[in-house]
Image (cartoon, rainbow, N blue to C red; front, side, top):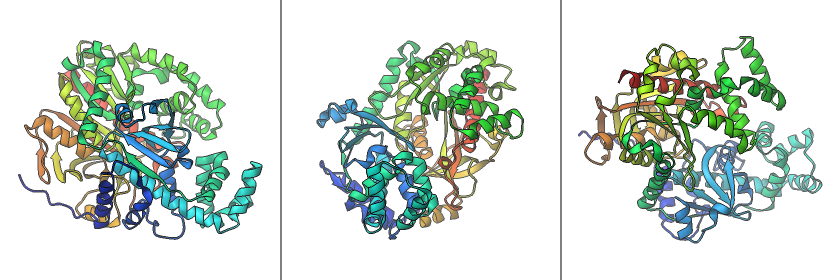
Length: 575
């Protein structure tokens, strides 16, 4: 087999990675401050002003959105693969700690109410993700601390914290000046922290941040044990379905789009959902619905209902009882939800194709698929999992392949950064370079632009793209991106390569190699990847999370999900 030409990565980034993995060999706590210099010297594209005296608010906001709000009080972060790992290391009650969440990163977290935060991790990619996040947060926190202590900001925050009063517009403008940030950046902090803005800035002004990290178990076996137990939980919850004997279509995406498109629950509760919109303080949602009804915008009415349903059941935290009608509706159509209890945060769903009701499906899924009645005779299932992070994709797909009767297809959709597209576009790669293995995978992507484009309203579908699966979001810099862009790579994400490493082992008789060009053409397994663009680092485009009403996110997400479902249903009906 030909050798892949290894791309020359940044020596600074390689040094950073080697440094924190060498420190993690210790069984005790490691101090984040030992990493701040090597982190800052990487010139990360997400932390370009790490070495400057003024705060890099883009990096700080990125970091605080990916850790729970209790990080303001936290000193020690514990990492382990499962409840069993924490028990072995003396933290047997960790799941009795307060569950907490982060707005921008799906991960199981538990907070002891004092200074310790615990997290379940699924692979080394969680380490490559979390350590730069915590390091960036500490660097920028300490810059803000020094500016607060050296300026009138200290007294201003002290007074408002004591009186429990908000800042006036003039005070907010002055505070932004003291902190060497723009009023817009201070406004972004207010959007995140709201009535805790003064308290959190006051807390930052009280002390430097000195975070510590302890990896409780880091062997490959620990990750595999946790992954096997994740699967055992699914198999036990769905024992009556006999997964070990059934043909399976594997989908890696999210836990809302596929079931929304298949169940018809949102459309059946439109009046209730529209009524809910009228009761909340979101004028943009009400205007959007009015514009859709008046046909003044091209946005999808169904996508709007799916978006509101997610807020109604999730973000509004209306209580578990409100999920009952939805769960009953889905179960009647053979849709089973399996939460990832005691393990990393990758929930799953099983869909029995023969129990689906074609007339309930989103019209975009069933149109021009006249043979859907044949699903009643199907023995196949869809296994849909929440999109994992990085190398967890390899672990999860490998475990699935080992434990199901037959794998008929692997379909993946997720976010990516694009070096040539726009936010809301869908990238369809057929070449993937994988940083972990240094392999270049050439494969037949079962999707083409024509499969997605009819369902996109705002973006474009770009096929024949080249993707690079990176180790972490902070672990690239401009030189890194320039090298890949010069080689025609335009799609930056974290999971395609690990998934293809698992696919290689499903169709070949050996473990995936290292640093080779691998052709996966003409295999019996149906494989498809769809990446929707959430960042454009070359053009400094906004992140999807900056939009209050994420229609630019809903549009490519549902267009991709529709393409995946149409592929599965057409394959199964033709079988």
